[in-house]
Image (tube, rainbow, N blue to C red; front, side, top):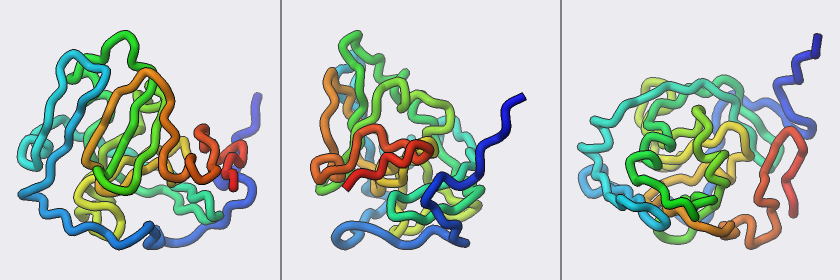
Length: 188
C-alpha cells in the first residue's frame, strides 16, 4: 500500500485565503463586453460572450492552489467550464499539441494539450459561491490545479491551440514550462 503524499508540496506554507497577486494593474473587464476567443490549430474556431458562456455545462472542482512564491490555499472550490469542453467544440487539428492561454494583453502561458484536457482544468467564474473578484482574475480565469499558480491565467480572453510550445510570460523570465509543485519546479 502506498502512502498518500502530504497536502503541501515541499517549500509551501498554508495560508487562509488567496492573496491578491498580479503584474501591473487589473484590467477593467465588464461582463457585458467580455468574450473568449478559441482559435489556432482548430477546424472550428469560435468566440463566446458572457451570456453564451453562462449557458455552457458547468462543473465544480475543489482543489488546492499552490503559488511558486511558497504559499498554498487548500480546498478552494472553483466553478466553471472544463477547458476540454471548449477544446472539443473547437475541433483540434491533428497538429495541435499545446494550448496557449492569454489575457489578450501582457500575460500568457502554455500547457500541453494533455494537461489542458485534465478534468480539473477549468475556466472558472466563481470561487466558492461568489463571482471571482477582478483582483483575482474575474470575470473568468483559468484554473490548473496540478501546476503552480502562474499557469492559472487571470482575465482570460484567448485560447489558442498550437503545434509547438510557446513560452509564456513567466517562462520567458526563467520559470520552467512544466510548473509541477510536487517536483518543486519553480525556476528563477
